[in-house]
Image (tube, rainbow, N blue to C red):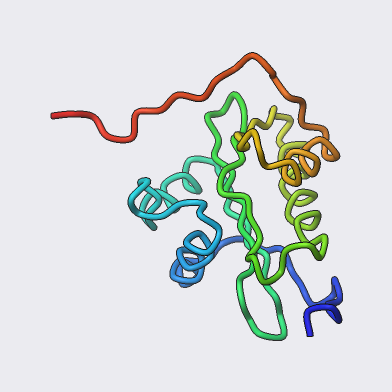
Length: 149
């Protein structure tokens, strides 16, 4: 069945509130996020209200969300988060639909776009390179997830 996929069967669209459960399911399948990482509906909506975007890739025949790209905005640059495709749909070049739509947002806004990718994820790194991202090489990622009280 999935070998017969057509690009016309997919649409990249903006996130709607009722997509949240499907997004959490997608993120659990892909290991991209969840409430344990502070990725809840309130945070998503807040980042959109502050000039960010949340794109979903929907497989129209099944009305199933199979991809996500969350773009936050600090008004200096955009940050691409939680970019992923459902494992059942990987290897079909569908990531290009989301990547193209994400990069177009950056172009229209005239802002730089930055992302983090696991060092061992060669497929993702190659995709991002095709869309103009550059490896900064000498940077390491650090985070505080929860502040001690």
